[in-house]
Length: 345
Image 1 (spheres, rainbow, N blue to C red):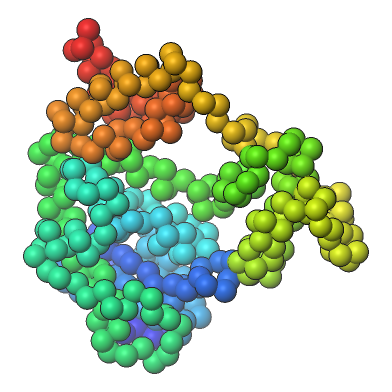
Image 2: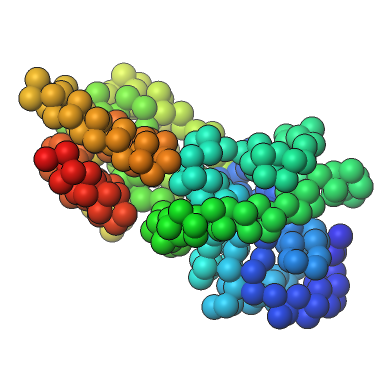
């Protein structure tokens, strides 16, 4: 395991010519707002190593390699790994191959785990006994280090098989479209709108109470970030909604801090359309949805895809109601959809 900057620099020099890196991270996010990065595992065609980031203060040499314009990340379910590294580096990888997304385009089970995919592709059973291990523990036991190394050891072999399957089935360009959203920096800087959307019960409030709740959500988020504590440790969703509705009151000190925050906030804390409860489908919309489902099922069968990869039920409703950002409106899905509609006619 690499635990010093000189060791890290020697390893990076050793893999300098490697442009394709299998990457995984181990982090802790139980009592903090931001994920605490503990380990970075990197495999190449010739090596596999754990980097103990808790023991190395200067990670710039590592970031220089990870975010080089010729470096391609091979990751399984990449979002959390990108987010955890982004918190420290403020950078996004240039190229990405996500083996979980690739597998979904080849009709493997949706959101298949790395362990399950490796068993199918490599006939290897990976130990899962340290899934809930506290990665801040030092020194790390040897069997735990081996467990962490296994999380990248089979990524490149899996990648080679999946890439071959995608190429012969003419879906490799689809993967580029599917992973593009993971390379958007805004994804790793959640907006208040996204957090509001996830706040259970918010959409059921009247507009007056919603507006108050949105301001409270923004204030809670600001506190959580400043204190580096989980947002629900600062204030639970239910308490927040109770404060917004006037069922309970903030303390005098908290009320002053909240009022000062709202006055000084530069954000437009207004109601989003996302928070409006979805209207029930009309009879016409239900019929349209059933027609579209038949087309989607036909596409799924013809191209060996799970129907949910083409469109989820929620996305289908958005499409029916004219939402041009629905997946069926662009990219490979739109091409297949229009082609299938013409065939049907």
